[in-house]
Each structure stands twice: as structure tokens, then as C-alpha cells.
Image (cartoon, rainbow, N blue to C red; front, side, top):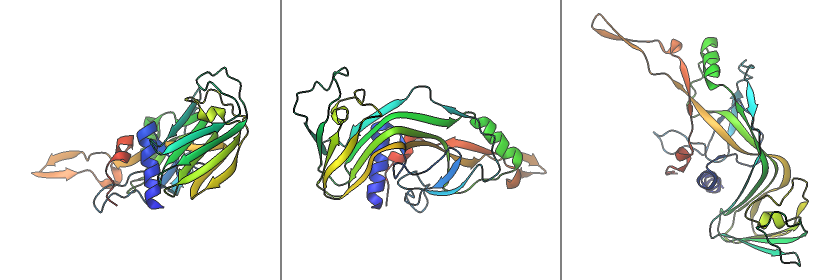
Length: 268
């Protein structure tokens, strides 16, 4: 299970350029502070945001409430499948032009075959991103309050992306199958433009070991993260000795986590 979590995080990062929330739909908010128990790369290496997470605390719990938040103005939709490991077969009784967004939405069955352990089928419709508006102001408030949040291998959630509707499948076996019924044509197309949030989709059959986030409302799918780090110590020369600033007064900075850190080689 651990390796499947890591595979999910890496594939979402590689294909979509995003930091995944695992499990999709798990409750997480802007301002939460998380650790990733499966993200440790090695004894002397820093952790990465891979797999499932644990909540340590939040900025609100630490008394920091004034965090201006902004929401994206236009939604995005995401669709991807593991390369050469996911196959679709649509049965509607009609021949549809899936590239034509004007084509009327129709009911039918979509058969999805996943032919590799860890293979992913990911659909997230009408995603809005909520994010901290001013990181510098947050840094200043943390430092003014004297909150020395230099916790090793912890991450601050600075944005969360929530899909109005999502359906996410990962195979936990080498061969799995699932059949979806209802308004499934939009899932087959190259874009999700044919699919509405009001579409009715249900699972009619499944075979093999599958992790499934069923067609659901308000599913958390991605997040952005930053880490707390101490600023480089100021150094002064006095009486032929270097005097370092006291750790207690050393200011903190927030450092963004990039997708490239997720894609680095994982040693365990």
C-alpha cells in the first residue's frame, strides 16, 4: 500500500504538475500543518510530500487567524490516465464524436480496464483553488508573534484545490476492471467540456482490487505546500570571534515545495 501511495503522488506530479492529496477527498484546509509518514527518502535526507499525510496542527490552532485567502476566478478540469495501462470501451448504442463539445450528452456504459498495479484513472471537474493571499505578511506575523515553528519534516498548506465533481480510480492489482453507467460520454472525450457537474454517473460492475473515489461532490484533489526554515544566521565579528544570532530570535521564512522534489528518486 505504501508503494501505491508513492506511485500515485509521483504520477499526479509528473502528469499534472500538482501535489496530490492522498486519499483524494481527505479533509485538508489552507493553514493546516502536515507531516508525510511515507515521504522520508533516507536517514539523512529531507522528507517529501508523498502519499498520505497526518495533521500536526494549524495556524488557527496557533492563534493566527488573520490569513487573507483568495479563490481562483475560473475553474479548471483535469483528466489523465496512466500511459499504456488504462483502456476505455464505450457502449452507448450510438457513434459519438467525442471531440465535438456540442454533441448532446448521452447515457451508456463505459468499461475501463487497468492493466498494471498502481495504474490511475483520474477525472476532476470544475476545480477551484483557494490559496493564501500574502505569504510575506504571514511570515511577518509568525515572526512578530515569536512562533518558532521550525518543525523538521512538516509542511504548511498554502492552497487547496477542490473539484466540484471527481471520480478517481487506482488499481491495487495487476489487472482490474470497472464499468460505469450513466452520463459517461464526457469521461471518454479528450476534454471534460462535454460533462456537466449535474451528470449522473454510477459504478455498475467492478473486478479486481481497486481504490475508488466514487463520483462525488467537493473532492479535495491538490494542494500547494511550503516549509518553515530558519533564515541564515546573521554573523558579526567581535573581539576576534564570530557571534551568531540567538536561535530564539532568528526569523523564519517560508520556502515553496516544488513538484521536482516529489519526482526525485525515493530510496525506500
